[in-house]
Amino acid sequence: TETVKDVISKAGTASPETPAMSLLPVLTDGRSHAVVIVDAEQRILGLITQTDLLAAAARLQTAYEPPLKAVA
Image (tube, rainbow, N blue to C red):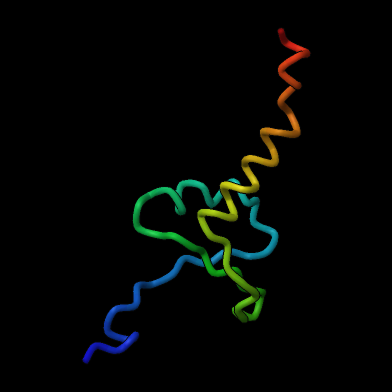
């Protein structure tokens, strides 16, 4: 029986201050689905996933996109 240790892959890490969109290449390369967020002492604070990044991108687009009636 395989254990988690046998199938785990090395996770990328980032600090909480990392710009979220800078993780786009990592999370869209087809190999990583999440990045571990760690503090200065390398303690895990959480994860950012592809879904988190997609939601953030959608919020940014909505913030800068004029309503359709404004451009019609």
